[in-house]
Amino acid sequence: PSLRVFCPKMAAFRSVLNVANSAKLALSSRTMASHPLAGLLGRLNHVAIATPDLEKSANFYKSLGAKVSEAVPQKEHGVYTVFVELPNSKIELLHPFGEKSPIQAFLNKNKDGGMHHICIEVRCIDEAVKAVRDKKIRTLGEKPKIGAHGKPVMFLHPKDCGGVLIELEQE
Image (cartoon, rainbow, N blue to C red; front, top):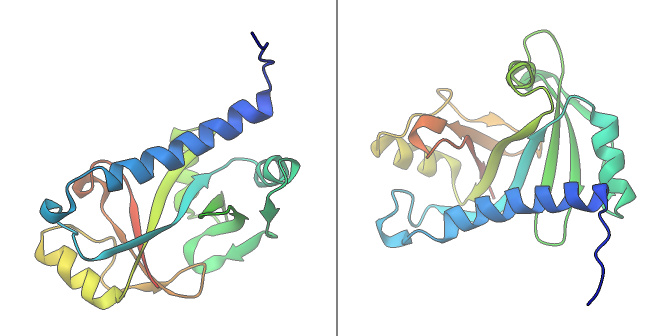
């Protein structure tokens, strides 16, 4: 029998992978024909994690060999973003920027940070927004905004999405 040695970095990394896999499973395990967003949803673009210490979080992923971007201020969204590239998706690290940051409100409730939202690609953001509104799914905003990737995005109310904040991003 082999001995397993506890490694805090690997345990934390497994925790993040479990969150990403749970999000992916939650989306893929439903019968898509009956899902209200059938035909609209593309691939998982990223899982966003709010963090109270952006440098520490970025260094964690760097220490595991991931390609990690520099921090970029997103003034219009009230966040700093750092992207961690994975073979099949990305992790977006979020940290408050400015006094009215929505991420600060999240961190006030979750001192250690945690999963903030998932981002799913759509072919056409305008068609997707119309379709979700037709299905009585509330959007957080009237019109799409330009997101961290320079593409139009719209957030969907978590109370209408199984408790998960969902960001739709145009491909």
